[in-house]
Image (cartoon, rainbow, N blue to C red; front, top):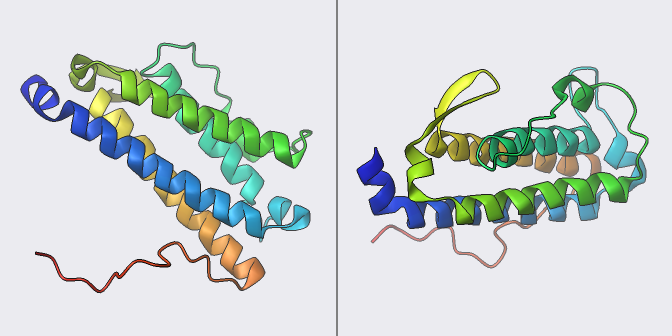
Length: 172
């Protein structure tokens, strides 16, 4: 594992940060389509609003990357991400989420190769640094899709994520 992290560490970190950046752009596009009511709207008791998704992602990214890899104390309160009314303004919820995501990208970019192979216990799971980063990229992508679906349902809009790209190209 250490040999692989030394061989592919820079490329892996660059790809992880790229995927995070792509998700953040998609999230920003979705948020720009949601009015205040839609931002806080919960479709049913088993579905989350855009606000709750951002709070949840902020908690997850903070716990896994900023605490797990960055060494900051873990202060996540996962239950609070899903319960209770947020007393902050929408702009604060959005800004806090984006700050954590950007900080996580900086942690990933500056992570030494050896940290990719090093095992850590995060949220009760034993993961390598590589596994922690993969979890965050996958988890962020998953909830980005939920946010996109919610935005499309509420606004009947084409989000145009791949506008200008020819997705019908064949592999070389």
